[in-house]
Length: 589
Image 1 (cartoon, rainbow, N blue to C red):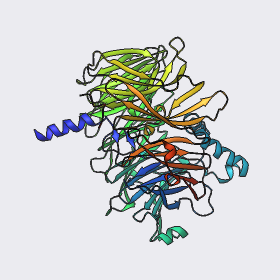
Image 2: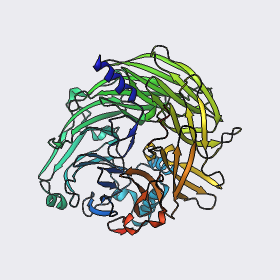
Image 3: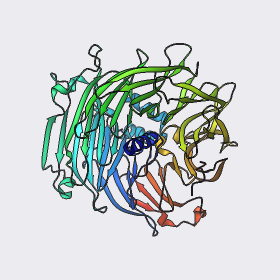
């Protein structure tokens, strides 16, 4: 009985989310997600486009103790995304190198415009795209030894001519999902990619680029490759890597892998401790193909079934594994009127099986936010008015809408709090047109599923003439909740300045209201993207055109005018090297 109780408790926490030990706002407890910044409690690791920076923190201020260039001498890093996973004294850098115009415009519209603009003009001013950009996307995994923070060095690199879809870390087990749709670059008989592994015996060897061992090998055995349907055409190959990054583990030197033939694009990755899913949209048929991988034995992953869900996912929060079932929230857009659906699949050891669907959510609207919490789901749809649906999933065979709440505007990110409270980040909107009017935070009481309530709403910039977008609307990792305070980085774009300015809102969250404690940032050319609390301080990472700024600030609950901080509380790291110094009240249970 004790084991059953423990399992039930773990399942109840499965999608409630928290900050990981490395400082990242994550979806599933115990499953860390990659990010541009990580911490081990004593220092921070920041990955920009071309180098790793290690910054120690403490009462004496900030100190840039180590740096490591990840590109070989003389190479040119091209447009791509860079992220980190941290396991003990090992950092795993995940880097995609390549240029895709669709990806460029997608990121232009959803991420830091100044960074992409800088790279764009770099190419236009100094070279041509075709001169340095690889003909095919390249994923580079870099294993970095940070046991001596002042002298980080590359132990191993592993390169695969595939796209990077996503990654997760459970304890010291890294799971990396790749995808290739270029069959010309795959083995003709087995349709499997090849990888190149390079190992270095010392820091000096890695600095000079002298591989002790360089091996090119086939990624998987041919018989592992399968077509998920047996009849549909295969448009791509999805490959899951697993690595043991523990102190005694082989790191990138040995891996487990499994691959599967897939369809579709716009991949969404979701993971639990023992499962990993990839969902890919097939726009021609208005459906999403979902592949499941079992990681009960992390070094021997296996494909554990595939299924089709009608419609499109909004992001990873639209997927949830709970008590032997996968719940999926999608919007069906290929028919009119549009509608949203909760689909439930039963999981077995080797397959997924459709159980039931709850149809008819948000007719004529689109899903804007989802959060699964145990036996309930919270779904926000929007066209002109935001309905928040509370879905009862206690019986997987008979899900139903328990409650519904309509209010102006919409939410894009929902964060669970103690005491049956939710805080949501989104936009106020004109109820007659649906036009966004600016950043809005909403505090919900969902203690009664049949009667959800809005407790309070906060619009931090009601007098601002322009557009205000919170970064958590785009990237959940930019949201931070700590000791009853929510930190929300935001971009303010005025009618006169299209580049805008960056701010962070510190918002106190109580059982009854949201209160703006402080707004900081706003320095020209700086855009805060992460806020991480540690040891009674706040640490803020901001991007700039040719650098990043790392700041140490006080917690708003112990206010100190930010101007009182000295130069040692700021470090600006310039692209290419160098630096310039510089009790939870929401628990309403």
